[in-house]
Structure formats: structure tokens, C-alpha cells
Image (tube, rainbow, N blue to C red):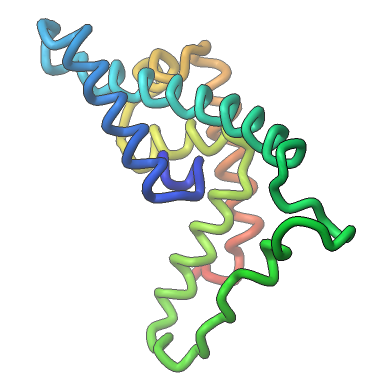
Length: 161
């Protein structure tokens, strides 16, 4: 979930580690049944903080000498620095394409829809636990989850059996 939100495995692992440490520090004495919603609430908070920090960092990178765009000054174009796509020879299973499409579709969802889908469908939390983890009402969870499902169905229609 964190990796989809951040787009970086390293950042995601850091966020999960911070959330786990926060859970142990503050809620280690709680009943084990309460840990999953508490952990996900802490993780969602860490993800929102990460978005805020990265937004500020990206502003300052432009001002303080990061890549500047078409003016040709300071550094190469980050798109040009990306490696070329590998040929599709190793793609033998159609399931790999479906998984890649699913990951792209999940990343394209708005953050709250992404969170609701991941907590409900992949983590198996009920509506109440998801609402607690996301810090919103149960009605909001239902709305975000429904919108996510509809959007994913539209984007992944070609993979339906």
C-alpha cells in the first residue's frame, strides 16, 4: 500500500517501519485485535505526511538548482535519464500484464480511494476498522471504496474472464 502511494520501495519501507515503531511505542499494551486498524491509521498518517514533505521538497529542488526544464541549465532531463524499456521477451504469462495493469490502475486512483480499496480488499478490514484507520466516517469509506471498484472495473475491463 505504501509502495503504491509513494512510488518508491525504499520510501515505502521507511514509512512502514515508522508506522510499526509508532504502533509499538504507543499501542503495544492494547489488545492484538486492535493492532491492524491502529497500524493502518498510523501508516495512512505517515503517507499523508510523506506527500506534504515531498511537495515542499520538490518546490525547493527547482529553486535550489535541481533540473530546470527546457532552459538547458543544470542537469539532464529526468525523463531522458530513465533507462530504456526492456524488450517484452521475458513476458510470457498474460497474468503478468494483468498485474502490471492493476498496479497502474491502483496508482491512478485518488489517494483516499486507493486507501479504501487496499484496506478493504487486500487487508480484509471491515468498514468500521477501515473508517478508523483512515480517520473518516463509515459512509466515506463506502463511497471511496465503491468509486475505486467502479473505476478499476472500467480500466481493467479487458482482463475480465
